[in-house]
Image (cartoon, rainbow, N blue to C red; front, side):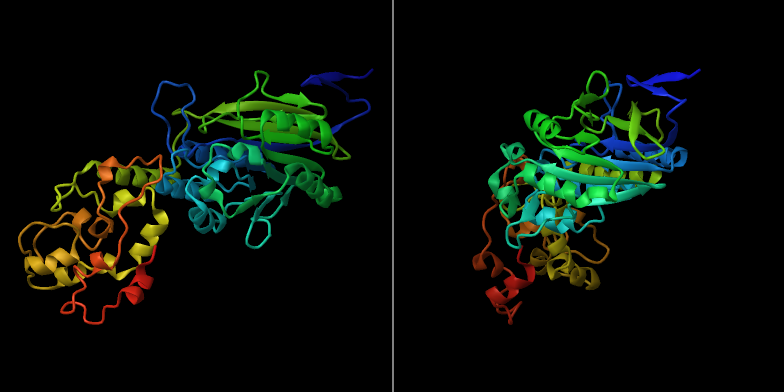
Length: 428
């Protein structure tokens, strides 16, 4: 007499077939730059500190777990400082594979290249290449082992999902036809993988094309239109299609049950709600808390320059200009206030060129001065009304030329000054 058990609509006869092993895929989709829980009334509130706690617990329960993110983890508003924190958190989360969506270009190519491509994130893409070199941006696939089971993971990104992204943001990117690239990559994976997973940044119609025309894919994690199906999954032909929604509100867990030949014979799926019932991981909580403390300080109106406009300081500008901040931080402009601090006293003429908009009296080492005014910060040269800049659009502060520099780099104060030579030291 045979015993039967039903999982996800598949009957398995234990008299003839024995489930030999289980591999778990833990997946997230479309984080949208969310760092901490929304603080709202939603049942699932999201938050990277809680996600880290959950990941650690899942790794203890099921050591043979594979962690995947289908892309769309940057913010939708182009806040570089926010996205820099996301990258650091994703590095700590230690995903086994991460796809690239159009959203990862919201901060511009320079940020994408300097911060994301050079990070420790396990990025994969079968069809994104750099125009200048003609080479793939990242490796086309990864083979990850879970015990004696090998999982081949690749990712594709469709050009059609870039329709709302300004072309200037990704002008150095070439997007190869995803169908050809995917088929070629699967051929390269070949017998090296027992299970094949696709992280997909494609439209719904393109997803159907994948299922109909591409063979050999066991699981697709859909990351573009990332709604959670009512049943928790879809079956498109022989492929399992899953998604975990948006804003990091849920984490999906897919258990793949294999027989002795490592053939997928069954699966089950659950979605874990991320909310305040999960404790915050201290490391990620500290990382995000420091960012929000910095962000909240930006409400300080700072000093007043001669135009009467408020001065917010470099911390404000850093939110959208991380690369420029990095350049400034390593320049002499960032250290300009040190001579003032080290001197016994300084007159107002000296202070004016070693601070940003300071209008107070002469100071001594014991005098206080707001941090947003110390050193030669952004607003010392870029004369723009920061209160009128919408972070969702491209900002164009007044251009800086030699006429701005020579206000402080006079022949008396800076006898070696030559504009083109000095500009190279701070160009950004």
